[in-house]
Amino acid sequence: MASAEVELALAQQLGIVHLQEAVDDAEVALQVARDQLRLTELGANQSAIRSLEYDLAFYQRTLRDLPPDDARRLQAVERLAEVQRDLDSSRASREEALKAAREQVEKQEIELAKARTSLARAQSGEEDPTNAPLLARQQAAANFEQASRKLDALKVGVDSEAVRAAKTAYEAALAEVEGARAAVDAASLRAPFEGIILARFVQLNQQVQPTDSLFFLADLDDLRVQAQANEVDIPKLAVGQSVRITFDAYPGELYSGTVLSLPPRGQSQGGVSYYQVETSLEGEGADVRLGMWANARAIIGERRGVLTVPTAALVYLSPDDIMVRVRGDDGKTREQRVKIGLNDGIVAEVLSGLNEGQTVLFPLSSPGQSFWDRPEALR
Image 1 (cartoon, rainbow, N blue to C red):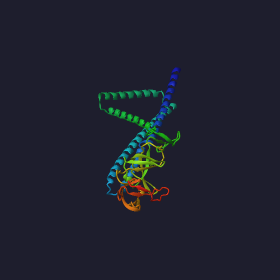
Image 2: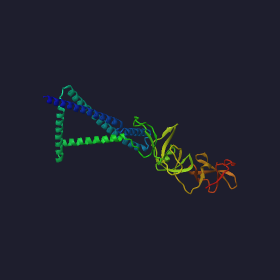
Image 3: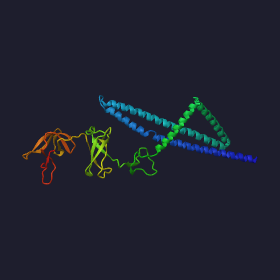
Image 4: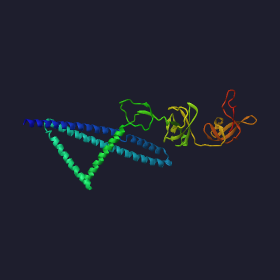
């Protein structure tokens, strides 16, 4: 009799231990579900949605500002509709992910409440804890029997409700696994390219937001030039166009490059609009470093074998009235009107008004010479 009482007491104690473990497991599962919900709230298409919202507002403003008869309106309308569809899809995906995460939290809260209730009833004597292992065994047997029937149905190819439910359960489990993998990937910070970290903006164990800058990463083997173009010059530029680049720090060094990107809209500073143009930087020579000031000239046209004159020799009476000073065979200086073609700021193409071999004067002086007294043979 005493032995039976001892065995009963041990069984009851073991049952309470199992119930306590069930409570602990339920608490962990609930915390995991809450963490997953938090990750979903922070990262479920948030950056994509913000980008699409920005694009939507941009095309809405574009349509508002374009005249009714502007040919670009049709393209803007089509792009606006495309952005709106993408935005609606991203928002729907986010809501579905949040709904699934919230349902998982609610499910784990219910499981935790059940586990705590069972433990409390066992500790108060309202429920026999030795019944828990028996109930668990019965439930496992029932689950096994149900799984066996589903397996048999799958083997014979019966398209029953059980088969469809099994497929649905499998797809839900697979989606949960993929979601967990995506969450792990989202929690990992990977550089978009190989390079050198030049600056760090955060400290160890510091909490950051999705919009915070963490590092300044640079690929010193692939430098870019950020140039500014005004609203007069920007229509003349195109992606892929060749540019010539010089640096104030290295006079005489000439680099080449290509226009990589043109912004869809400009920026305003001091009442003046400008456009940020990105170009590549090619060639070897001086030690070009980040942050140096550069000058970029786009090649919008080329002329070979034409008559040219230094731009320093041009005197602009008006944009269309241009003069040069020439020295005749008699040694006297006189002014002649010329018509200019391409002009790169160094030399200008002469379309008419001068002949090859004439001598022009331009304001480059040396000690002992006046402003206009230095001759240069026209080439």
